Amino acid sequence: MSQVKQNDAVKVHYTGKLEDGQVFDSSVERGEPIEFTLGEGQLIPGFEEGLIGMEVNEKKTINISKDEAYGDPKEELIQEVQKNQLPEELKPEVGMPLVSKGPDGREINLVITDVKDETIVVDANHPLAGKDLIFDLEVVEIK
Image (cartoon, rainbow, N blue to C red; front, top):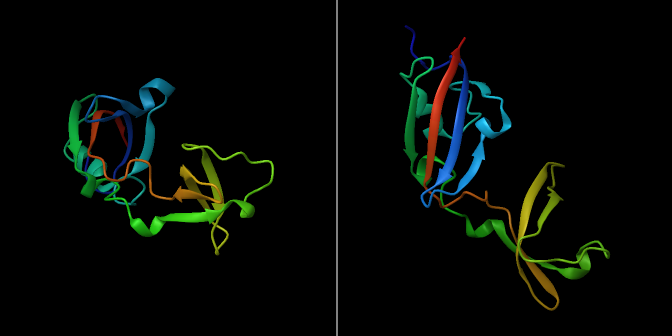
């Protein structure tokens, strides 16, 4: 029986959890496995490494340290923005997601982390930065 190796195209069902058991994402819930090619950098390194050597229909749980996931939050991705730079109709609240355009036109996902009198604080770090992750994996297909 073949095993997953670098450069294989695979279909995988997964459930991603935090250390407290909270589920943050699951292909099982959506009913469709994800499909990708190992080694193309589409997924976090620890996820791809955890699949190496698995066989079709094999299930396992892997623990991924923050260093093999999204790393530590970066202070430079947290900024204070004047409220007058926001659309007038926007009523900012802590936890509210925003999208900004970078200088290259790329969209940047932000989350409001603080609302002050004249400014808001936004964070462009990945929401899972700084967290160790747990994934339940099942290889559905190796192409």
